[in-house]
Amino acid sequence: MGIFVVQLYKLYKISKFGNRVLHVIYLDIVGVTNPLNPFYNFFHFQVFLFFTKLKNHIMTNIREDAVWAAYNRACSLTDTTIHNTLNKVHEFRKQTILANEFLTKDEKSEVIKFLNETHDNYKIHFNEGTKRICKNCQDECLATLYCEHCVRNYLKENFSNWTSGNNDIDNLIQKCQMETFQPDNIVEWIPYNNLQNVKYLTKGGCSEIYTAEWIGGSYEWDFKEKQLTRYGNQNVILKELENVESANRRWFEESKSHLTISNKWGVVVQCFGLTKNPSSGNYMLVMNEMEMDLRTYLKQSYNNLIWKERIQIAYNIINGIYSIHKENAIHRDLHSGNILELNQAFNISDLGFCGPVDKPLNSVYGNLPYIAPEVITGKKTTFASDIYSIGILMWEISSGQPPFVNFEHNYDLAMKIVNGMRPKIVPGTPLEYKKLMEQCWDADSTKRPDAGTLRKDVKKIFLNFQNNQDESQKQIISNQRQQLSIYYSSNSIDSISKNYTSKTYQFENFPEPKNATEEEQEAFHSKPYSFNIPNNIDYFNNSSVEKNVNISKSNSVYKVFGKLEINSNYNIQNNDYEKETVQQTKKHNLDINDKSKTI
Image 1 (cartoon, rainbow, N blue to C red):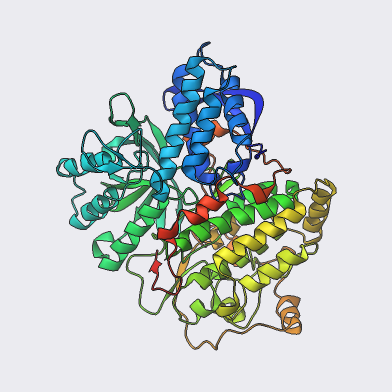
Image 2: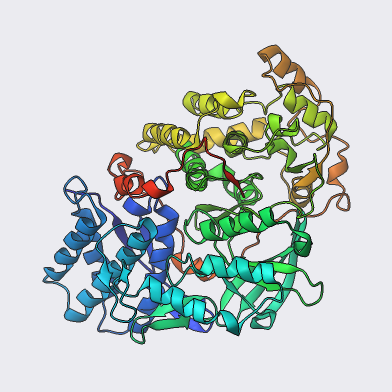
């Protein structure tokens, strides 16, 4: 027997997407949708698409319960040791649906349509599967419901119908469109007059952030008309980019990599394209709207998180970095302010567009507590410097608070980090988790694990907790939080967020990074580092530092998912498509010793 993939909950809710009303089933998604599966976020999007397409069948002739029960059964019967390729999995599930005597003809058609669409997406995504000759363009294509070449040809023919007013921006978007994987992941130029209700949200690092409603929304494929159509109004985030006109060629190359990755892997917040603010003249990224950042999520949820759930969060983030590194790319500015949450899935943002375009030479841009010591001393960012940031994030997940909360982000803190100061381990942290965390923030970058190894090791730790449903864990965590006298309060959270923005630093005369001894660590933490609220902290002044990116609660189109709970009995060793994820991405398995794209 295969994995029990989808457990139906008969909970319903009416949710709005633009002017559309959707009938939403809240699901407990496991199997390919478990956070410990590489397809977790990618599949979220596919489920969302299916629900929105189901909107046309909110009638008595389609029984949503029956449809999902049938899909669930087909998935649960899938044995990936036998059906060990994408095509074999798809064919088995399709035949299982066709043989289902409890479904009507229309219901079978609905499930198979969903199976075909997701199968097409997987084939294009991994460049694997049976090809066919497109009747329209006579080219070989992988997709069956559409032709990827026809989509690209349509976009190419439309090049003359739009312009950003900047040749470099036009070329950037055109190159991205010629590498489009599927119709709903197209990067495009979005005229500013197609955005309405634009409202200032906050300032994060060197960018101002706005919310807006995108009229018409992104593309989707019309299966009947065989052409691209607009999906419908969408809520989006606008991130303003300064001085793009002065950007060099490398910046545009990195930007192309970011845009491609964000539309290829679900672990990165999707970027729909670019627009231009007519008031400032600055270009803006148009991105998918998320719920909140990790920092805010931990503040709100920490007392209710057991260790298994915290390990899931860590894995979700590590899996994101794993996917980015597999693309031979580096994030460069990973911190809890740009890990964004939606329905308990965590996506990475600010990939490639972090930092000012005109950053001074010999300067460091980032969120100081998360910057690797070798980068502080002037070395270039690497895969290993991302892993250092992961180590700090693992500590933040374990403690529920940002690192070095009572230190100013200045030369003194930078020197302490270079000399080996790390956050103080929280009592009760699992030993294996602690060891991994310390490996990640080792001063010697060569001793840090790569993302693939880290991903496997965290998965093993999860197995030790998946059957532990002892609710006393929550009480232990609550007690830890009280013992640490966490400073979070309604008066301080905004001020703390302001201090945790990315900035440009220029440091000189640093020694080589080293690991501190236990005695040195105690000395670092004995006086200045206290978890109690100090009497005087400059960054508690509301006017001292500008506000960090904190994506507030939104009316995101993805709210149709509802809250997804993870089935703790899921056996991670039998992940659907786990093998395919490794085997079918050989073309993306780049040597990490090659010169990487820094995006």
